[in-house]
Length: 398
Ligand code: A2P
Image 1 (cartoon, protein in one colour):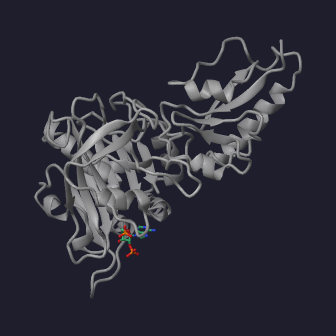
Image 2 (image 1 turned 60 degrees about the vertical axis):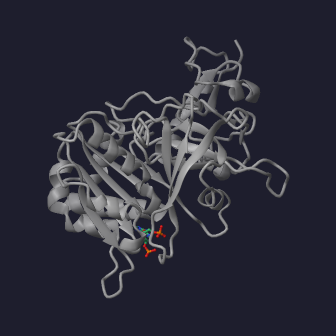
Image 3 (image 1 turned 180 degrees about the vertical axis):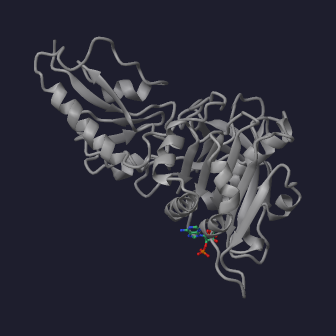
């Protein structure tokens, strides 16, 4: 038998094609085509720089192989092949696999330190469909509406964009994303990569059974995709890819408590979660708590509609950082003040935490949860990996 190799692979069913791993790889071992993101076995040096930045855990897959999968094979995959039976340390003549297994195991443990390993979906989440449409075969969506959500005078221009998928089968779940294909090419003459946007409507559509989805998009200064989307007029046709995302998914269990923490357009999946519960189990025993940060009320997406959502469905903690005459408040500051509400939820084995929004928020929220736990004799450093391993702790920051 050939010497066995431990091969680093990406799960195409979980990967959301954000290309973060590709940006972090110092040896250019990660590439992609219109279909998949793949790892070149001849270049990967197991540095693990790609592991912790991956928002989904799709990057953390390994197979013991006698003949490594080629890039061409990986580009074709719709799912990851199973580990071939009978290949393990000791079955090859070389005997070097054992040492490599130990080394990779130790490096991975360090990359995952304190996180509890790769994320998994909530136990009661529906099985997502992923990667049905790609750059080579995109879905065509027609703009049904493009509404400004933020006040006309506000600094931020955030839009609610509704896309009709006509008769195309594009099944989505709350928490999933789509890729938006911006027409044209970059400076190097290559087509633009699809940009990812989280879906803000429920699985059965922005309008129930109308086969449409909604996106929440903030116009970024100089942003290619965001300006393209924000400028779209009703009736315009665009290309989208996806759906993407296999772990940041809403638990279906109506008894599940859901703590949702977001800033700005990070609210998109939580609008979808709330709408799903409103439509399916408005009297659910599980509680939904929303911590939502924005500069000012005028810049908080969906501020008006949120005011009409009853407390029985959604407990809201809206925090503002730039209101004249008021102290700056971030979501993590408010969480510390609401320790009395958070502690019973953290003590409940059916509580899920979802964090979505600015990258910096992740550390801030982590520290707040540490403080909240400490004050109640809980240990966040051990609770967080437990929650993650049981599909109850999810982060999507950008
Ligand atoms: P700030 O006023 O300090 O920028 P944006 O409007 O840029 O999308 O941001 C949404 C909200 O998130 C703003 O209130 C912003 O506050 C806040 N914010 C910025 N950085 C953090 C952070 N590290 N943790 C939590 N909230 C943050």
